[in-house]
Image 1 (cartoon, chains in turn yellow, purple):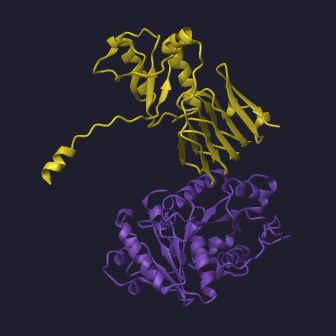
Image 2 (cartoon, rainbow over the protein chains, first blue to last red):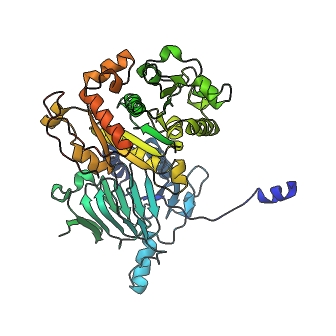
Image 3 (cartoon, rainbow over the protein chains, first blue to last red):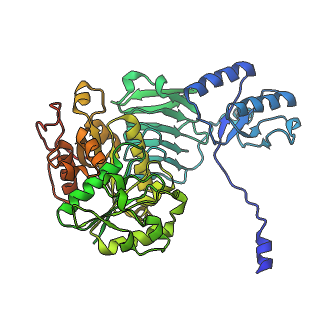
Length: 231
Length: 271
């Protein structure tokens, strides 16, 4: 008995998780100021959430990277890893360097090479929710998500594909969550706290008043999040 | 078959304890055996509203831990002989409640009562989830204002996730009870409209209880409002809600702005 326990005690798995990717821009000081403005409008947005820092193209020194991580920590943003960083930044005091299959620099290289647009990975399927998503609930689905009920204020719905909501949308909704700019969001009554596709987001205050309580369609076009009334 | 009802809200001060006492008394008046159970360990109030605070010898925790038998801890109401109270402990905290203890007490209550009405503590922590755990029916008490509505929405999510019924894959039978409805403020548009609350929470409406001096007076006298002044607007609203809970269809009346008097009544769509 003891021996089997011993052999089981050290297990190593590779697993995939979702994390928010923050991409700072030069000059860092200005970017931090913008982040402050955003955080003031959405306090606590990053609380307890894993965040990855995409520093590709920033040419950070070790000291600057450390300051950036500290500045973010002071704002309650915990950086669990850095993406697209110079291998020289590999240091026990900094978050570990992550390798992504798709950093921006890789993408542009791929584009130059082949010209075929990036395609969403095959989705395992769609999921149907036939109830309401209540305040405090988080729903994640790898694929397309259809919700027959409403999404309450304080609820969060995340999908890697498109999201269809046949009730009122009063909470947060994030489609194309693992980097799928082709994802769409549809809802029958728009009163969302946040709408995001592939990381491009719009807060409630930034959604035109003429769209509130209307059936709408949201999609990405050239990095612009469009929200239009469906009629 | 005994029915276990949890009276819950998330937010404090919306009228859970008043509702528990009023519904319990109204159902017991029809001759059914009712136990009202206080789950607010450490902050018990139901004994005061029931006027039994001087008669509490043993409480829920004693029964849960097997120190005394259930019938030793049950306090029979002085006005209604089919109404009983199981008080919460005032000296312990919520950690004294265990899953097994609650299951044991609810199981024993099911054997000797028709209705078991559980007064949930506020919040979404252990006390509240234990109070709803074994319920068959939930009465979600909500005031017509945004913070109460959001907290109720949160509680509804928990009712669909953290109860035994949900675990068995069944759907919890949930009802919305709007309390502290102020017809004057509603007339001025200072309060959420009844239809808006129903729209957000998407629950069938069990009743609308007007804000009333009678509720406060009854609490201070230690009597459920349905017994203290049965003709008051609040008491009648609770009596009707109790009827609906027992499956009797009674049209819902919206209190109007002539204070205390019910005006036009109309059947309301239950979402």
